[in-house]
Image (tube, rainbow over all chains, first blue to last red; front, side):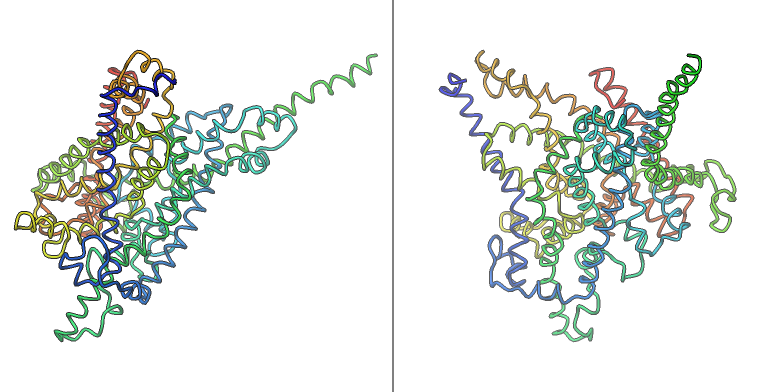
Amino acid sequence: MQAIRIKPSRPDRIFELANMFFLCLLLLVVLYPLVYVTSASVSDPQDVNSGSMWLYPMHVTIEGYHRVFQNPDILTGYRNTILYTILGVLINLAVMVPCAYTLSRKDLPYRNAMMMFMLVTMFFSGGLIPSYLLVKNLHLLDTFWALVIPNAANVWSIIVIRTFFQSTIPREVEEAAEMDGCSVFRLFGRIVLPLSAPILAVMALFQGVGHWNAYFNAMIYLSNRDLFPLQLVIREILVLQEMSVSMLMNGSGDMEVMAEQARIADIVKYAVKIVSALPLLIVYPFLQRFFVKGMLIGSVKG
Amino acid sequence: MQQQAKLAAPKLRSPETSLGRRKVTKYWQLYALALPAVAYFVLFCYVPMYGVQIAFKDFVPVRGIWGSEWIGFEHFDRFFHSYYFGTLIENTVLINLFQLALFPVAIIVALSINELKNGPFKKIVQTITYIPHFISVVVLCGMMIAFLNPSTGILNRGIEALTGRTLPFLTDPSWFKPVFVLSGEWQNLGWGAIIYLAALAGVSPDLHEAATVDGATRWQRIRHINIPSILPTIIILFILSTGNLMNVGFEKVFLLQNELNMEGSDVIQTYVYRTGLLSGQYSFSSAVGLFNSVVNLAILVTVNGIARKVSHTSLW
């Protein structure tokens, strides 16, 4: 090993330099839009729109954030999204984790058949319309449940959890528990679950990110604005650029009022992005190692 | 003695029967644990699969899925001969081929990060490149709309400063695909690399030591050790991504779509959404959706078959 470290050859040095250069470039490309949005969210919209603000904040103002937190739609959306995320994750875990444990037991009769039954759904689905009709027939349209029940489980996550159980719970423990007359329910609750904290964390996060960021189901299943999640509200502001009346001044055709409306729309545009993404971005670095671990487990072919 | 034998016999048998009974209880309990998930899949995956028969029917909501009349392939026929068919297929396939062409980016990023020594820089690179993955599609599209705006967007301001003109990124159909695919790459290049990094972590250090002793350069070691080692992972992910060939990131297409770029941005799934949920042609759009799923499945099976023959790595 020492001989190796003493003389890094010329091609290796060139390679290392090129590699560093490539990664720094990559960092720049990834980072710039993020920095720009952050700076724009605290800058005067005039500087942002004219292009003079391109990296660091100019004429710092927090009016954007102020306006965002005054908007009743955003606040309701925020509350709804938090509820959808928490409830959605709880349902996900309650449905998927026990099933994954069952599938991890190699002594289970018809295990492969059950696996196939689930895998089919990964590659074939009824599609948008039949799913929509189902949700409609179940009378879930325009209810809170429409966003947490139709996506209660997915095969990929079940496979990842199953793989975790297979690789971490020693078969001997299960056998010993069985010999002592411990029921499967007890085994699952008292031994398996306490050992699976890492995978529970990973899955809660994966699913949580999914629930937090989803807008499409909400768009097709909900029409009651009181139930809208944050992403749907943001979509109206950012993509449809349609500010709800409550956010704007009284809509008289006055030029000055119109200009003011446009200014508010501009100032809110960046702040709202930060506000919606911030909770995940704050949580993420602390849980990064779990995420990576989760992907690692998932990459083991199941 | 006889009495003793009689007494002993049931005692001997009893552990066996209770073991059998215990087994039944055990399996019953194991199945009970899986029950919620199985019920979910039946209700939310298999019932819609059953419901997809409306693609072959003239669906009338009051008569229900079963009561509506069979009309065979009429909806499919109408779709194949419709004015949009060519454009939809072209857009769907091109967007995906473009995406597939960028498939190696994540591998290159992973190989590159893997060459760094463990330390703060490696950690920073990883942490930062994963961030965009956590940004929602809505926010991402909002960012793009802001950056690409011809009069106020920072990208167009930059281009204007350099060339004196601006580019109609979101209003010209021909710009849609590059904008869509490249922004997707920005969002996922770091995250996509994680799985390869995990595979690379499993490469035996002995191989590298031996190669270094033999005078192999880093580049040679990447080519002859790292890449072959992660090849099975690459193949599996490649098969999976071709299995999605006809499923574009439809939620994002939908957000970036507008009347001006429609010609370049309309894909099968957005068409299904429009004809089905917005104009209420449930049967017709189910047929279009079904066509999409079947093509997808066929591609997946074909690619998987080829991979199994050529490389002995496959999904099944």
